[in-house]
Length: 330
Image (cartoon, rainbow, N blue to C red; front, side, top):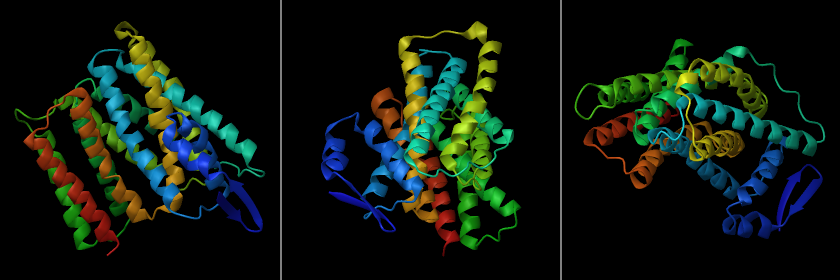
């Protein structure tokens, strides 16, 4: 069996349930993940790094799946972008709220969530709306690369603005990533659609801002839950304004809910749980895999083309960010 310890209290969990059934059943993540998150948030420590590895791997797949699910729904016009966004935020908010209730019931003395500003919810909404509409034009891998690169550049730039003194390698990495991002969206036959690229850049800036606003939160899952709930009215407003564009299919609705519940709500919760076992450098570095996973999934499932421009810009953006992250800790 597997043992979790905190002080003099000990809780024994069945190893078969945690590992063998996890591998054999596709529904096992729904059964084990909330329990894992609950223990992690309560301060329980795992005896090995296996759980961190599993949580991190599942998180990266969930993050990459967001791009894939969105492109699958919007690329085939299975649903309009506004409805997709509203269903994604709404289903994500419901999942996170239920998870919060589960955690509160399982923890004897749950901490009080930190007060949050509406600015964070607005940032989350801006990210969601621009992310959705950008995938009317962008391929899954290209969109993920632009988003990821912009988020990281935004956060590094914010650190510089706040007075951090970058080391030479950080400057080299930041400039390389910026050049790679500029090359990816520069005019040319292989360039992504300009409007879609601009929308995804805005999404990246908004998500970077949202992440920066949430750094001081004592309860990241509660922080995300509150902001998802607050962002829903904004999403409904966009849906009303674009009512003339409304169209949907059950396939599109299913993809939107999957994006909201699994790729967003569950994905973010998994990430916060995984962070308990990751250093800041490792957390930043492992995210380099997200655009690569999204690009591979787009090629395999959506038959998207792999261009020389995408390969070169990926190497520059991901390599530059990797240099900047590692250079910060040299």
